[in-house]
Image 1 (cartoon, rainbow, N blue to C red):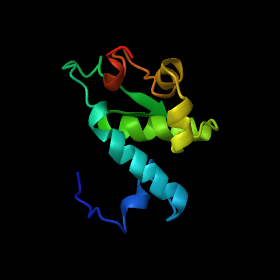
Image 2: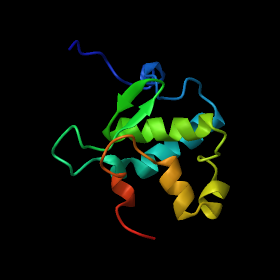
Image 3: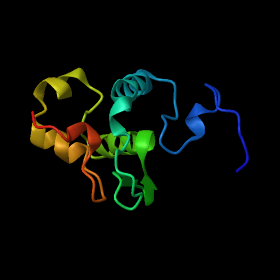
Image 4: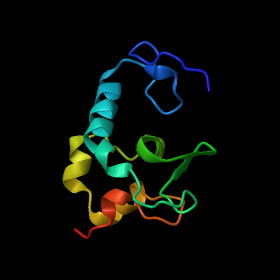
Length: 112
């Protein structure tokens, strides 16, 4: 694998990161940074780990979070809005953060 520099100038080059510097991008970055700790799997078998498929690609760990957030935004769910978090219930969160593998989303192992 070739190493590439990764900084604020190259951040937007990744498929899952915001492409523009806007208030929406700031909201996206804030949400992803807030939730980032929650998406790393305890499952040792890679075939059973939590993952999200987005635009035909499989993403795990931090990238699964980014994919789930983008999938929600693409579906018109205002997940980066504080109002969403005030009104969201457990079923909505389970749907937004649903995975495509065997393991459920690590952040929702517990019950509300």
